[in-house]
Image (cartoon, rainbow, N blue to C red; front, side, top):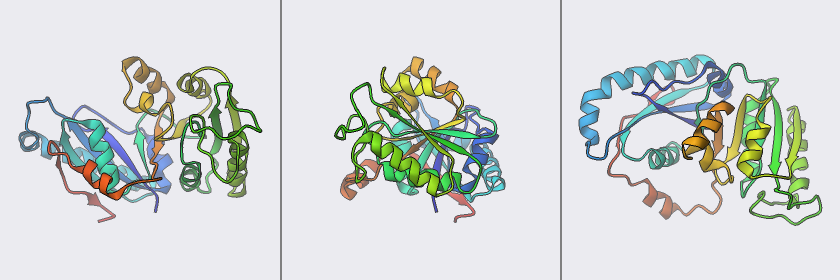
Length: 271
């Protein structure tokens, strides 16, 4: 079953909009309640002080996700490094994607970015599982920066290449595969501007964004500076599909070690 990790700043009033909960009703969810600590604060000390309140909030969120249709569990983490924690827990729960929660109502159309060195097949499979048989339209988006034509060779800086050949041809082939699955799929190509600005410009008319973690706009959406976060806040939820190509298992184990984290136990229907 497809699984999505949903990080929530649980002690800072973090929440998940009903629209995102409904969108994720076709998949399993792990709610990651996290709290970023000041550098000198021991995680164990914070756990003693805040665990009960945070756990109660996570249990409520998990139940809301289950009501929306999928299975849901939760984790509670007190950490000094939000980015490392999200990466580590996503690996531990074998998440296919993680969410950047944003406010949205009913989701009628999703913008799916295929820009960058992303795993197009994984993104397509994730979108198929996410949409299911619901009447949710998909716009496949490619930012070329004016460098790619229909007959150009694939460029890792623009879109991941595969059996379908050039980026624009692969874009159309991916749309055809989604249509075969019964999904209303359109395509759009941006030939000017930075990938981040082009993606922001394409957002109006869409209720959520799906992108790969190797996309050129990825860190701007998820871990960018303040001005970029303000821009990202206007786009609604962002679902980041994890890239598992060329993964070194030994490296993955090494990255999971974070002595500054303390974790709670996952709970919910999946356990």
